[in-house]
Image (cartoon, rainbow, N blue to C red; front, side, top):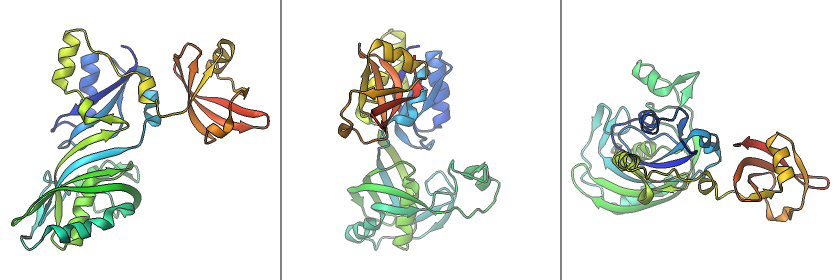
Length: 300
């Protein structure tokens, strides 16, 4: 299988691990990985790396964006509708302006406590395993960044619902935003539905369902997204044949004829042959006599 990426439109009801396993079977490829966990109930963009491209996952864009529905007046053990209801409080008194005001505190750099049912490890164990075992763990807050929250729709009622678009950095839990919004409004809140629209530079509009992937495989038209396209946001360096060979053997390349001011050093950098083919990822640092290119990931 040609190394590359797959922009999967994850269906509801499957874990990210399930999706990786299914892609592995469909493509008959042992080396498959994903670019960021999605909860089983969530849908949308799940970047999948194929073969040697799994080594590039750490270099993909960190951007994430979601469409979410938050239901107010309800609390559950999992902070979404998959969990057991632990409290219900009609919230018909809420109006959109009050909710918009409360939402402002969840933008920018914020402290967030991950849900008890999450994949974060505490003392070597997953939080969801500890929660299922009935253990209560004090989960430390983490700093995350929420770039934007835009209200799309508001449906008042006994248990009002709010549709939002959220753009955020890695590690942000949308379930936690729903939970904490409910706390701020003194009503409780849960995540009712979630679709990831952007992840690692991949967009929902360009994603493929499993049915579409299977059809393309049957028709022999399936082509992975090229590794070059997936890391196109990184700066690039082109090496002549002799230097390319030395770099692929693990050697540093010094005194590169580069304008260092064009790079923010140290910088993870795409490394190409003169013919444009991707050799891997290097770290570009400043040396006494100019830039030095150190091998990080060699793909060939």
